Length: 427
Image 1 (cartoon, rainbow, N blue to C red):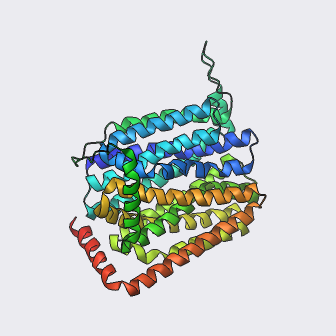
Image 2 (cartoon, helix red, strand yellow):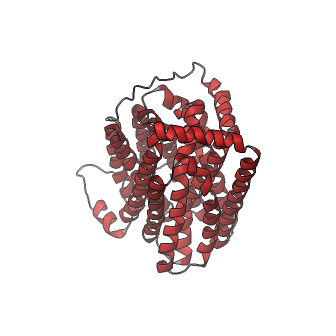
Image 3 (spheres, helix red, strand yellow):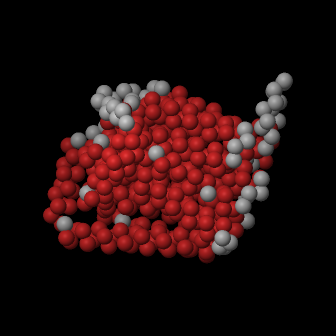
């Protein structure tokens, strides 16, 4: 890999580390004020909100400037969201601002891979990026859990600055203040990301013209025979992964009686499984192998349902590792195939923006549905069961869709697969 790739990985690691630790701190902040459970569940869709709203614009913006600069600006937006959370804004509103920064960050983060590396290294690069991201998830949720825990929070709150009243009086606030510095560290790495030499695509003078352009890009990817399969699968996988962050916390609270600090360790267990699955996929799978693993998505939905029958942590840990591994193994080849097709059809930034729009819309809808169900009084186990049934059912429909298209459009799909195979081998 080129040296710039490792700088990108470092920037991504620390930004993602802070994102995941902040989620745990925000949950604890809401619990500390005795907010209803639906507000805690709503953190997930609120984070996804600006991904959906700004999807027509962030991809074109990422293509109009050096992507390292876009990532730098995005991390500063995340810092603003943290400061809002510290100084009185409602955690849901402040967390949405952090999501705004993440929405601008993502097209640049993934788009720069297709500018920096040949197609033959995309699966490997995605494996490393996803593996490192998942490692940051593991460490992030553990860090967040420890920062709001009694030991670290007591030590952090013991600092006294003469003549200065910081207003930081609770464990979640102390945790958030630490995470601001991690975002700033990620921003420092952003300043060292090299220029790729790819020609920039200037933003149009009338921003509203991006709406029909984005809609055409969205339709183009959905109508492409390989694009529609990979986009549907990755959309649902990330919809599951995004909402599992809170589902594991809610399940651990009811089934095991765990606090946020204890339950955050189980979030890390899921991420360990995803890291293993992602790394194995990057070593064993090729660009053209993606559609063959869709069946694993059905298994993921069924495993989520089985989670409600587990009441022992020693059974839960390997079970959650398996659940995460299936997701990691499934998403890497599908993600690489989707990036490759999108880059060829419309450019890296726009294709990633379309992908983010669909994935985050799925996270938002699934999260809003889960939050609504708990707000209406549905028990946690019943809400988890409904979530798993929806996932398994939609994955089954995607599998049937792919099987039918393989029969009807076999020649066209084989031709596209041959192109992908050629690009994968020869860059």
